[in-house]
Length: 304
Image 1 (cartoon, rainbow, N blue to C red):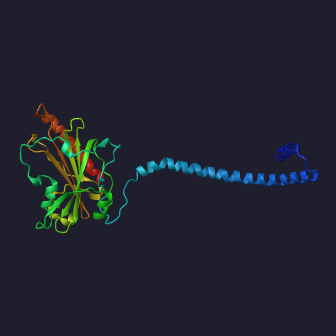
Image 2: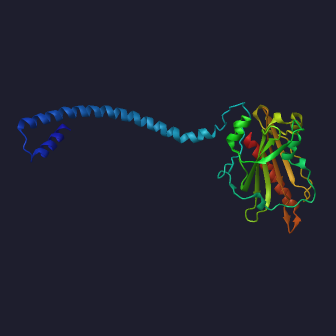
Image 3: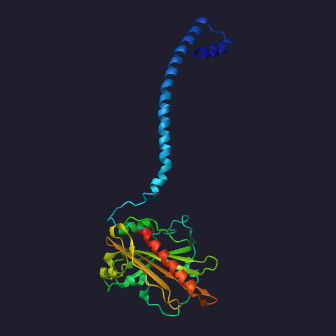
């Protein structure tokens, strides 16, 4: 190494007049410097080997971390350690792209519904029934169309929430909150997912997700209709009664209700009959009802 440096130096100095004494001193200094440099190089090579091992370990950890995270998806508990559920955001509240649930920003008035032949009582739907079981019936309440997000629900209900796994298909959403007329307090949050045929705009089914504080309502009434429990961390859902009456008089409606730590989570599913040449197709209607029931159960399991 030193010899090559000297040769390079001599070659570089061939055309330059340098006093012999200065040339000798310069070469001696380069020799000393090269020894130091070589010594540093040997030390650095040792540290480079150590650094290379560290890099390999880091790369290996990065490679397996996604698999570790996939097996550790429990949300962090905070607040009152309430159920871990997810409220939809003000725009798209699902895991779009993961399960082929495609959000469309259209008005629900554009969706074509089947007309019902019978008058359905108001309490048939959970949003109205919840108002009827308000703890103080003398004070009214109303649903106010209002956009909200995940943080809004967490701040009011003190719960940690995760995203629901929505059924595949094309859908749009609406949101509203249940407001106490006397105090102006928000008692419940509701997000409606309307699924429809994007080509014909025909309504297929609806899933409404509710989050509410139990203290605002009659606890006994809620406990009587509760059909989802979680003993020992295992989700149990009561069996649905079979759909024996398939007609266009009333819609197919199912409800799942879960209560824990003074917070209630409810999901309501609604489906219309399927008509072929303006006649009710019982077989296809039952298939739609059964599929809606399965999707409802899957939704509930994904948020508790």
